[in-house]
Length: 384
Image (tube, rainbow, N blue to C red; front, side):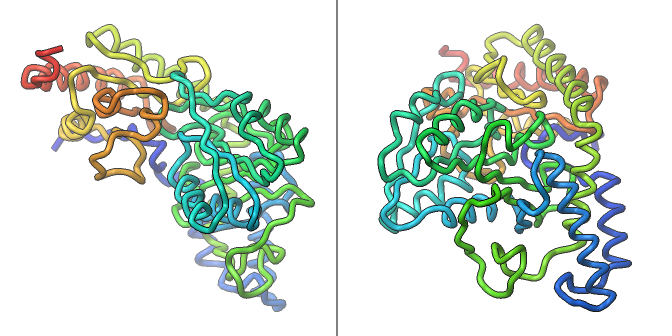
């Protein structure tokens, strides 16, 4: 069996030591319900509120503006359905994650019109296109902060100025951005901002939605008065504790770690481009996440590359993990103007805390060997 290395951090991240220790400590020591008034309940409440402060600090929010959810998908759904009412209009982009696109499709079924703004060939949404899409009945604009497939960072601050001037709420899906680039929700001016713990080296099953103070939000989970009446259900204190611990580590070390990972990403791209002909970087090379490289290998199916590299011990992706198994080409790359064949020949490499320069060098060799083999047997490349 080959030694295995993980280069798929945009899909999910390994649990960090900090998050693991916080979670196991809470599981052992905090047995109470955070809504109970006795000693055990108050211990749980204190640990929950500590996690809320830690998560809030990561994005420059007030703790009272953080609503814990079951993950980024629920956070997106809460924002879209909670801030939209019948008779209103929504604007989003064609490159959003399915956790935004699917709720938007449901809104359309419910009679809420949705306008889908296209992205450019660099994977970036034009703020003026958002401005042109606004209508008198627009209630919400939902634009991701960074794309999960290409890493393209969107001009959310410019879009926020447009929405604020128009009196329209702005929801930002920050699942891929938080912890990788500096985030201050007051700087882009987001009204709602989604987070997912498992993208930040914390466990799956916990996330958060930032709700700017004063923004009305209709709860979608009904029951008790949890999370200041914004999300009913007994809080998952151990997972929240892990989420908070991971967020605190990133608040202290994120800038340094992002710079380290960016240098590894650049090393990876240089090595592949030098060793392998007919490779193109998809999307903006300048405005993107420091850990993400999306490369198009002409004449090769991306899925075949993923399998070939997995056999050599490397975990990479041909697109969104939520679309794995699908035969359709990436909707993100299609929205950027790529042909279906071009979209299918693309592979995403996303780096993280566990990766080293030595691993990257070994990955470059594996990519070169895999491409050489696959192109030998590829009619698409021989006919190119």
